[in-house]
Length: 403
Image (cartoon, rainbow, N blue to C red):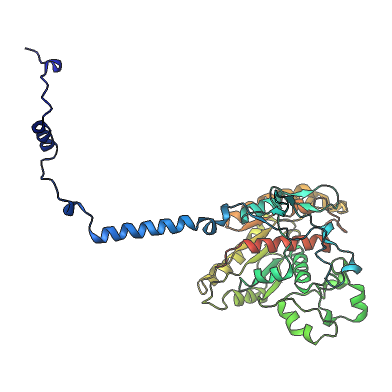
């Protein structure tokens, strides 16, 4: 006789039936309330986890600022000239209105606000991929904006570091000169050792001539210690607004670097071994190597090796910023166009950026910034461009971690 589930009899829904089903499902005796409760240590662990989760939830906007929209007031007030209190401002004819346009927007409550780059990655992309809307027009970043920090704000940024090093050829030298101009608030002679110059030399090297005249370059400031030691005793003073963080420039044209430069670098990187404050390194090589990929990467590895060796003594971070080369100006000599023209420079920019990133360096390309800027010789740019470049470096510094 075949079995059919449909012909199966139904059991009456009695209390006895329910009890029997429960007994079949759970043959173990029922636990009392006391037996079912969690052990004390488990309850304490649950309370701790809940408390930590609640704190992280409440503090999430402050703990993860990289994901927030950074709406803040403009770094330069509308109509205000950043350089109006700098020495030589009127004589040199430099105005921030020609260099920088704040990204102003009007909010619903009538207050002025601006949207700036939220993190280091978006900042470097915006600065590298921006451009000028016309020849000698102010540079405009792409996607988000950078700041023009006041000198007091630059000082606070520098206080987060144990030192700052600029390494490379003429491009880095010009940016370091502008960095000194900002810290000394002197657009006329802030890049130079005024104490070592005669009255005639000071008159001849003012303003744009700090960059253009070759006779003036020998007076370039190459370290904060130079100014600290000599400016106080000079009849023509131009002190730093702040000088708590040492910084210097190392002239490098390839690899190996001079023993003097490597020794100086090692001394700074291994100073204060118990400190966790970073020492950023701003680095670039281009025309001095004739755009040689091999020479540049060899120099990269040399200075990266110095930093790695120093990290065995000091535990601080040593972040690198690679600066891509500037574009060729329209006055570039015809004989240099083939090897140093914009086609060669663009390929060099692209390849060296990849090399830098493989070494975990940050990258700031300066090609677009200078593509429609005025150059007196087709290779180098003047004080105005250098000031913008120096402020871009300051923005990078502002986005670095403090430890």
